[in-house]
Image 1 (tube, rainbow, N blue to C red):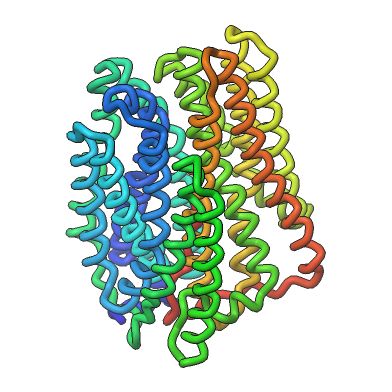
Image 2: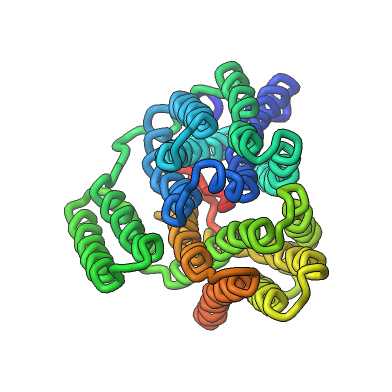
Length: 492
């Protein structure tokens, strides 16, 4: 470990305070860059599809592949950073992220974008693992909570700014060039983050011992996720892929058991599997995160493809979601203190499900002239639901993580969310793209089925949340991860 302990707050001196602020600036720049890229893409997808003549399967891989690779990189990236220091992996991940974004912007074929998005997601996951680890290393106590709060605010700002920035670029440059500029938007921010990191990111060697990389476990988890995705992408082979997914799931369970029994560290810590509140809370977070990203992508396609809105107008309809999230995030913790985490999370999930059902029903029965305004209102409600759900769910899940697994609990949580996003995006976009009939009426019905699927996913999370409350009547005390364990992950 470097001279500054992970659990020691040395920011009381002016020199240390300035150094800490610079380190936090690096982390915020990295978070803004990776999350801006994701929010911009939803607006650019229709223009990209038209410019490259991308089919439905290619579009699904372009959007879902990013989350898939992001999730797979989190746990190994975090453990490698724990062992060898975070700076080299941060720089390598950000360089891969920027280079892959440039490759996407120059692509003349949709499959090139698919490959580059997979690489970009892997780079983003590697960077994100080091960002949260660095915050854990540098800050402690209230300072750590403030740093993570700023990181969450930065994520919200990126989500809010992405659609209007992407829409403006497409409006100014036209769809053929505009989508390339939108995809390239991350490059200047990424280069700035690289320059800041090279100069100010500390060379922590926080943890010794074995890296504990469970590569077979990660491979089986990836195979399971892809096998679940493929039927929705190909719109066929449900029985074959279902059998393959069952086989992969069984192999993963056996492999995890044997690895733990041999004394090696499995992908999922055994203590986490024994904690029902942690497992159920992770399922709630997966449902919320996956449904939210899938709904955003399908809405962007519907607004531009069915209603004929420009990219800028579609971004304006989607912007209230970020505003709603910001509005409720301000008082979410006050509500938690008054009503408890479970009630607030359950209320947020219920509001999300109602908003999705209402938006889907509106597309069936209302005229195209008033529909954008109502969808914007429902987006605000969906964002408000997200603000009530995300942070309390994360805190609830990590609070129930057993002490011996507190450090890796957050990494597994965020990896699970990213995998859920990959599956949900594939499934829901498949429902919309493959189910769309001819004309506006067909697209309206396709959007209704997609919204219904998202509401069903959130509804499943709602039921699990209610069950989790019944099993957590006497929750454990909050667990502070020791200085020598990996980081808590911030689920975004």
